Image (cartoon, rainbow, N blue to C red):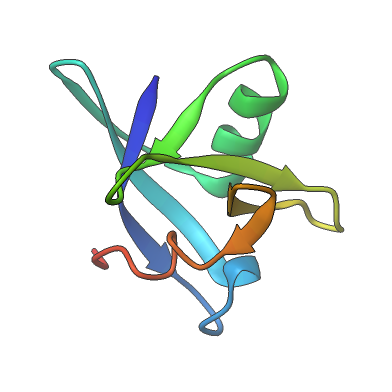
Length: 86
């Protein structure tokens, strides 16, 4: 499971503007584009944002182009946009 730790926005301040993401998976850290993470999630990957009291799942929004959002208890949330920028 990958935990998204930071985001980079380009061209605006909404979920659709997340261009790159940094993540941690065990002891490994990495960085990728929104498209790379979308493809990884569609292939069965599991990404989350750590929040209290529980982690929030990252999901793909099927738009053109696709983008990422978090969903907690069936409700779309802004957890990705609350992450630190890089």
